Length: 80
Image 1 (cartoon, rainbow, N blue to C red):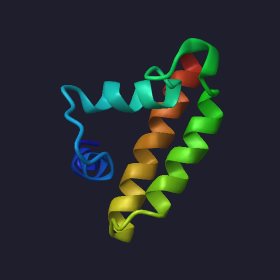
Image 2 (tube, helix red, strand yellow):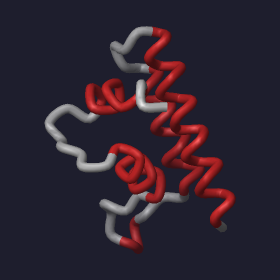
Image 3 (cartoon, rainbow, N blue to C red):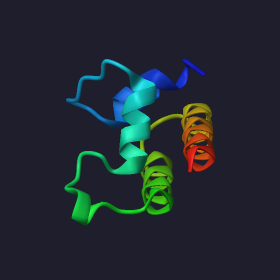
Image 4 (cartoon, rainbow, N blue to C red):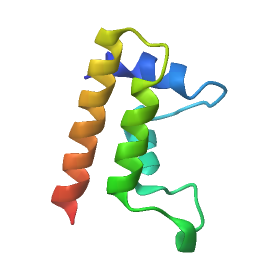
């Protein structure tokens, strides 16, 4: 799964990440937004996939990154 880390960093230019897996989880949980304004994980997942699809990544990179989003989203659903 580590292959998607580089692609994730290219989409989030200018940000630094200590833990890419945690960064993706925080993105889907909308942790960087005030709690009253947070969107549901389903909405963030859809927005993330759309952003990947519209990026300049290669098709193979898009598939890897979308797979990583799917895995992360499924893990979050299992935690609930």
